[in-house]
Amino acid sequence: MRKSNNRQAQQNQQMFVVSNLSTRSLREQRFGWALVFPSVFVILALILYPVIYNIYLSFFEFKLTGGNIFVGLKNYIGVLTDSEFLVALRFTLMYVVFSTAGTTLLGLGVALVMNKKFFLRGLVRSLILLPYVAPVISVVFSWQFIFDPVNGIFMDIFHEKLGLFAERFSLIGSPQTAIWVAILFGIWKNFPFTYLMILSRLQAIDETLYEAAEVDGANGWQKFKSITLPELYFVISALVLLRVIWNFNKFEEVYLLTSNVKVLSVYTYLKAFTGTMNLGQGATLAVLQFVILVGFILFYVKKVLKW
Image (cartoon, rainbow, N blue to C red; front, side, top):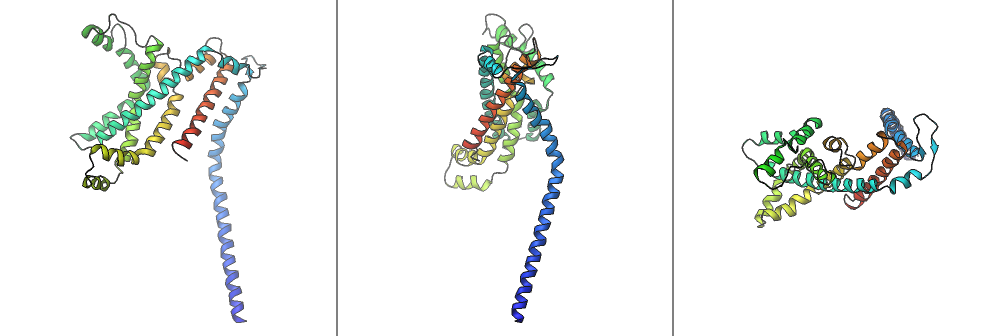
């Protein structure tokens, strides 16, 4: 009888402890939500509301004087059948693909070099970050001067000195050539971020892996292929995803360097806020960009990052 009472008392005590832990856990969870709620509310208010309103606006002919007219899918049909939209989409894909590939490959190459020990390595590492931290407006003006057809350094070298061009011309004056200047500028401006992220991961790789590979007779390429790349896979994959998102929405660098390159972000701005200011089609372009980008992210995360 006494044993039965002791067992019952132990069970009651255990239930009391479990109940207290459950209550404490519930309180902590509620307290955590209370702390997070203001930030979540602000983020939803600043992001979710504009997205929903923009989708709503894409179905209307927007008038600044009020009295918006519902037009259904007219804006979408008008945008998708517009030849300028197809040109903007082509320029955007070119910019995203080549600038992303360029920043990734250049950042990887520079990170591999900077991971080696040499004299004044710290100073060189710091100088590499200058393009990324420099104000966009100042470096854009510098690049515009470089490619100026009259006084620019580029034409002075390739036309006057080397004679590779028969006459002077502006590389940023034509959309067909300006897109490549914009891509080069994007690579030069943004590769330091990729370099820095890859370098930080390179320094975290266990050196014993390379030592074991050397014992097995592996050469430099084999060590890079079998050790370095697998260790960098997730970092590079994440950087590519981030760079695609940023480049797809890139506006200030392209627009300031040359307004001739109408990528989707620039085309949306020109359609919505210049000339006749067709805000309905501008909202439609923003929705299409959002859908394209979300589709790519879902595909990339599933197939590449394997989340």
